[in-house]
Every structure is written in structure tokens, then in C-alpha cells.
Image (spheres, rainbow, N blue to C red):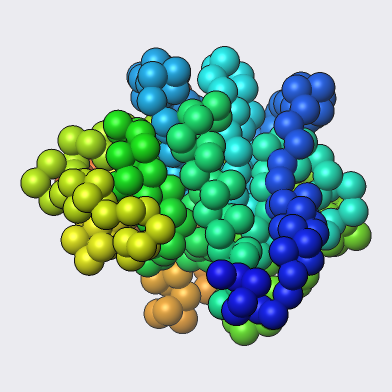
Length: 367
């Protein structure tokens, strides 16, 4: 069929398919993973105060990882997200995932090869009408779902959120990942939303520039080397929580009729039925809501909001005691509203204010 549409011979298409798969595929190496795991641990000790992990969700994730195909969907706020999730699963003796990564990273000399050996498979940002690429990408992703040899990880928001707020979900990747369930090639798929909350992201200044309209710099190894100054800063705490693991089979009861696909040859049925598309959309928003429910608020973010209110009122200085009282008022209000506020009970209120100001040192001056 493709031969007729493209006017190329089968041999030419075979060569192109081989080239695409070599470009896309991951080449997992436990040696590289262990090396990078040790390196990441050292870097985190230098730039992160601590990483808090809710072990209940991780234990459930480990239990289910050997029972059914698993899809891991983390929030996307930083380049550290997929590194952190892989390192976390490796540390808790869970199969490390294959990760759908943008092709931009593949062109980073050295870095692309390392990511590939840690489970990343690289996909184009846009496929257009390239049916061969669509077919190979779909089959590559679904093979991991069907075989269940490793969890599949992707970001449902598609790109990093520059504001910390959740972006609208993208449905394409989730649809592709669930097609084996719709086709009854797997009996169930488990979806694990993971929420990564950062007190301060390493790309904070970059995000500010992008929100001001300055174009995003192209990912490159040279740019990564130039960014080594981040190793001299402290980025506070990271909070990781694996949310409720969703069973696609249980959620699809009464919403998806898999018999419709069973009655028609796979080659002639539409890729996705309307009721399946509706189900995927509902599931995507459910994942997003689960991520949001497990997010935490750090006092540093609250302090930044307090300072912004004063800047809006053209008040350019603030007494520490007043800052303390306003921070406590705002934190109490957030707790009443049901927010998950991270508060170190070992520190005094004033120590919290000073700690927040130190993290915000690129935007304020302490005097």
C-alpha cells in the first residue's frame, strides 16, 4: 500500500524503515545507568537540599510493575523530570522505563547517546503525513506495552510548564499507548501519575526569559556545559509522590466496547473509535487531576507571591517581621483551602522567611 502511495519500491521503504528505527530506538545499558545514577546522586547532594519520596505509592508501583503493562506519566516542570524518575525507579529496584523523548536531545553530542542508553527513544516533534514514521513509532511504543518488558514513560503535557501550572493534556501519545488494550491484545494497562514538585527549578531564569518572549535556546552540549554555573547554586527541596495507580480496564467498564474491534479485521477498522477517543480524553484529564491533587506548595512560592503583591503596590522593601507575619497569614489561608503545604517544623518562622529569601536571591536583595 505504501509502495503505491509513495511510488517507491519495497526495498527503498525497508531501508528507510531501518534508518528510522536506528534513529529512534533506545539501547539500554545497565553499566551506563549505574554510572549516571552515582553521578546524579553526587550532583543532587550539591544542588538539592533534600528529595522527599512518598514510599507507599512507590511500593504499589513496584508490585504492579511485574503484573501488567505499566505507563508512567510524570508532571513536566523541568529537564530534571525524566532523569529524576529513572533514578528514583532504579533506586527502588523497579524496572527503569523507556522514555519518549524529543528528537532535540538526540542531536546533543555525547548526551544523546547517554540518554539513549538510559532508556530514551527519540521521536520527532511533528510527523506530518509520514505514514511510515507513524506506523513505526506506533508499533515501537505498543510493542513495549504488549510485551510488558519495561514501563513506558511520557509527559502528557507534551512540554515543560514554564509557570508551574498544568498545561492542557495532549492525547496522541496516550491514544497510541492504549490501542493494544482497545484491540484486546492486553487485558489491562496500569497508569501511574507521578507528581514532581520543585521548590526552585534549575531553569528558573530560562523560564522567565521565555515568558518575556525571548526564544528558547536550542538544546546543545555546548549550552549544557555553559550552564554548569547551576552547580554553584542551591535549588531547595524536591517532593515526589506517585498517585493512585489507575486500571484502564476498571475505568473502561461501560465506556469502551472492545467487541467492536474484535468483530472487524484489524487492517480495516478505524484507528480510534469515537467512544474510545472520548474515553482517552477523560482519562487524560483524570491523570492531570491526580497529578494536581498530589502537588505540594513550598513556603518559598508563597513568599514570592507575598513579595509580588508588594511590588504591584510599588512597595520595594519589606521588614523581616512584616514578611514573617504575611507569610504565615498566606500559609494559613492555603491550608484552610486544602493545599498540601510543606513546612519544616524544626525551623522557626523567621528561619523560614530567611530561607525563602535566600532561595529567591536572584530576584531580591537581603539587607
